[in-house]
Amino acid sequence: MNNNLFLMNEDEENQIDLTPMLDVVFIMLIFFIVTSTFVKESGVDVTRPNAETSVVSESNSIQIGITAANQVFIDKREVDKRAVRANVEKSLAENPGAAVIIVADRDSNTSALIEVMDQARLAGATSVSVASENK
Image (cartoon, helix red, strand yellow):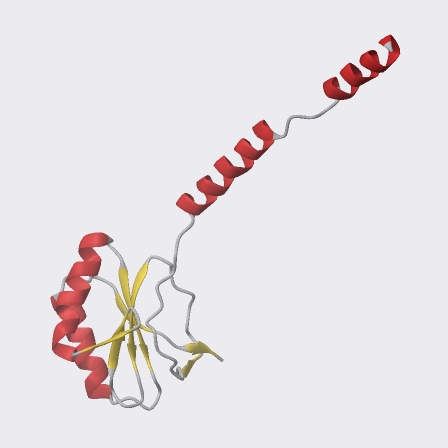
């Protein structure tokens, strides 16, 4: 009977406490969530024009989408062309120095593109560019 008592104590001592490991895993998870960056898309599917000189842009940008029907989208919601300036000003206040990237459909009008570019520059954006596909 004394032997059985001794064996029970050995089994209890050999168990591994997983609590500290779980704490470390949760802390790492929180760290990666907080430090990750989220890319905001313009919210519309467009067919971009091709360009041989296109370059990859930085992820720290404000994206504005223009559809083939000349509708303007920012953060997955339709915006009037006259409201682009206020939206870009708000985004620049949250993210100073961000570049504005206009994702225009190849069938959209040039006048719509120019109006959006003009509104973005009036909002204070120093870098305004148009997205394209690599050839």
